[in-house]
Image (tube, rainbow, N blue to C red; front, side):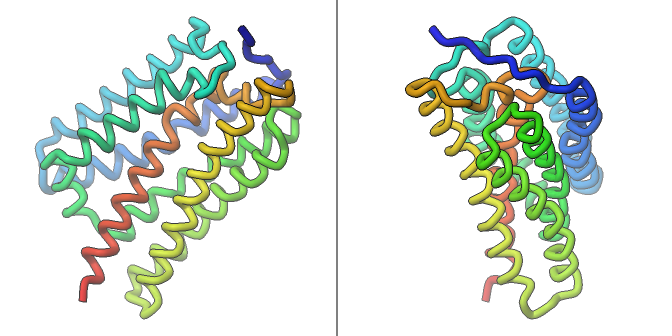
Length: 239
């Protein structure tokens, strides 16, 4: 049974990651607080805050307990975190009335701007620079996230200013962002398969703490956000 290879990652990279990774959680919570303050009881905000705390605690405990250490396909980190979390979002949360109320009360531009947190993708590039991730995978995934994050500012501005091209811009930006996260998720599994079969470098560093937070949290959350944006574009620009 293969175990993860622990690549020598400089402590400052891990420390910076731990300083930055709260950003997506805070942005999402601020977004939800604004929505719930106007239209829903704050218990929704408190419930989601508690869930994030418990989820992050679970990721940490699972990681230090060695639950992600076995190299398998799908990777253990996906089986124990990503897949259950994704099922929770798409199988339960999306179908609740409170989720729909938040979506209905939110503006398209505010949903787009949430993707600013994807600047965290710079850590893919940093890990590649220190030979802890395959460079082609890390550069495509990292720059894809960074481009999505930065361009979200301009997409949101076009929507706010009611530009004639705002709908198309938002639609194609949303497709790009969706493809980027899907590529990252699928490529990680393909690279893991190649790593198991041929012994090439895998994505082991993404199964170790603190970087395991990325696959555990990002793919389901980002795809969920993109799906909501597609629905919002359709609702906002219906003929």
